[in-house]
Image 1 (tube, rainbow, N blue to C red):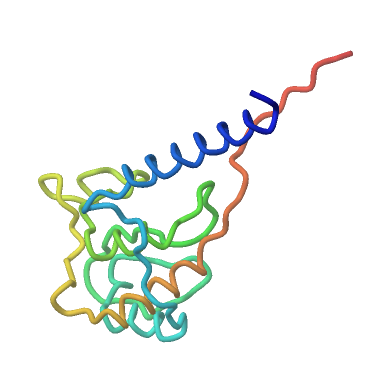
Image 2 (cartoon, rainbow, N blue to C red):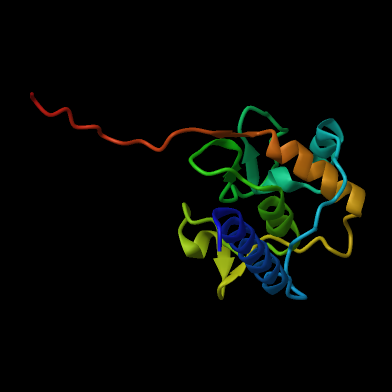
Length: 155
């Protein structure tokens, strides 16, 4: 075999492997291909207020009316993070709040019996309200480098 033949065989093998791996990743529960339309961040802020999310959440860089009564845990949304908050993570946090509990808070503050204290709004929230709310929240996160103490070695 000459050099060109080896390249064709290698390319064919690589493409075949890519197709096999792509086919394996597509399980019925795979999020591949999932994407809702773009939302309106301003309308999402209105949804945040309408759904009374500000009773338990604060949003970095935004102020909301004070809610009378007992002070809830006020789980912070937005602000500096060291990892991108993906579209899928935000949608999941809203429609399935028990999927992943806020790690920065004591478990008894944000959950009861391992389930999130956040109400599930799936029967009340429209898809449009969901996509607008995600558009609003996604703009509130700022990805920053994680803190690290760099040591400078003498030469």
